[in-house]
Amino acid sequence: MKDRTNTGWIFVLPAALLLGLVGLIPLITVINYSFFEIFILDQRFWVGTEWYSDIIGSGRFWSSFGRSALFSALVLCIQIPLGIAIALCIPQRQFWIGLALAGIALPLLVPWNMIPSLWLSVLNPDTGLIGRVLASFGWTTDWKLSVIQTWAVLLVMDTWHWTSLVVILCYSALTTIPAPYYQAANIDGAGPWQVFRHIQLPKLQHVLLMAILLRFMDSFMIYTEAFPINAGGPNGATMFLAVDLGEDIKAFNYGPSAARSVLYFLIVLTVAWVFTKGQGKIDTPAPSGGRE
Amino acid sequence: MRRVLPFFKAAGLILFLIFVCLPLVQMTLISFVATLPRPDTTVGSLTFGNYANILSDPTLRSAFGNSIAYVLINICITVPVAIPAAYAFSRMSFLGDKHLFFAFIAFRITPPVVLTLPVFQLFSALGITNSVFGIALAHCLFNLPISIWILQGFISAIPKELDETAFLDGYSKPRFIWTFLLPQIAPGIAVTAFFCFMFSWVEVVFARILTTTNGKPISMAINGLFGFQTDIGLVMAVTMASMIPGAILVFSMRHHLSRGFKVGRI
Image 1 (spheres, chains in turn red, green):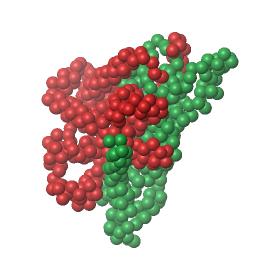
Image 2: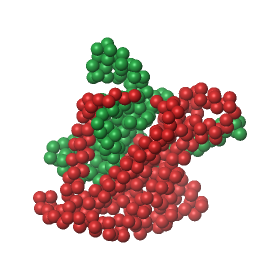
Image 3: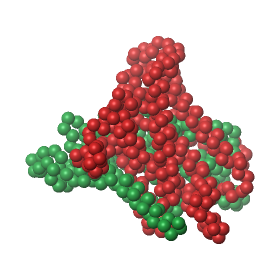
Image 4: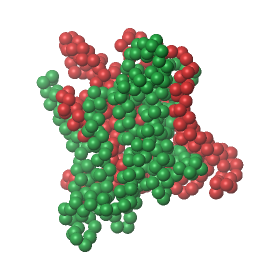
């Protein structure tokens, strides 16, 4: 078991201070701004919670919230099962593992602001590799006018970009399963599904929770990649929460954008809280040993 | 069933790899095509000119330098700070450890766009905007929590007896970390550095607001290439070149990644 000692604080102090500087101080500043009307930064007027009631009362906030939630839900439904499946598909020979992992990791290395441009060029019906194939099924440049097609493009792009992370995380957990587990399953005559259900999935739990957390938040607050694809269109059908905030910041609405930031941070806190609860739940009903 | 399963697995993996590679193939193809008329090339012809232009353009060259500099600085800040913290989370239980972990997780998943304005103000007050150091520091917001998480998985995998024998021999905790623990978790440090690189190299929100005049990294240099007449071939060539350091890292790290890095809970 762990030692009970408060000297632990000395060890985490540098990390806490660093995050205090780049995280906590800016956060407190944002909370402070969110109660003011600010024209220029030296001149401000107290407005209380006006910005908050404005945002919460606006239909725009809730429709963006709904769109982001739907987008995240779809992203998780696609990427988590796909990530697990691909991780299970990675071959066992050392040489091929290296090649497969290196290939899978490539999308993670593309600068984020280039990803929309890359996909716009791939999907171009005249010149793109995928676009030309799709063109024979009636794909035209008009896809930007269709809500469903724009959403599909965003989902495919996000899946392309981030499934790799889920694969790498899942694969790392799969490799920690000792070989005797598989041998025992083999002797018992367990099929592939049973092996997955009773040996592989339990080992994946912690990593999956982390993968879900990262993927959920990053897709919920998708910003850099979402806007250039279709500028939030058609008719605002792809205006997500973070895109709204980005527009506020670009327009120098300090007060409202600060209030929006605080609201988003409250969402973040809720998600992190659910995450830690979930982590505790995974750990408590497993007294049967075998845990590291 | 058992005999066909490997074929399905191989087919699935190959399909996924093709999906992953398609946009990259497109990018590579365009990067070798002349897309703007120049005196010595015609539009549409095959050329290495785009890559030659990267080398001849001082802004692009310095952008590569800046990117490498801030990622290295970020790793040099993150890893030494994360190691003791990961050790504490892995081995000790102290007042508020759960809450602190909760706070760290919350900061990791806070979208950078939420903190852009105050981070810019704070860093201007400290005088570290428009420099690679500013970006490196800002990226600690998401790299530090993830580093602590990865490293504590590696430390937890090391038997506690190693600590106890060292303490009996009269080693202090910091000296134990330095002489015994570090060599043991060397692969973990490599994986951590790789993840820091991966999240930091491609990030754009902080990179954009913190570099308005100077210290622009590659992603911002690419943004600068878009304009009235965009040389898309050059854009693709720069993107391609920006992936090379990462690809080399992935390839050299493949054995660590493929042996699987330990992940656990705090």
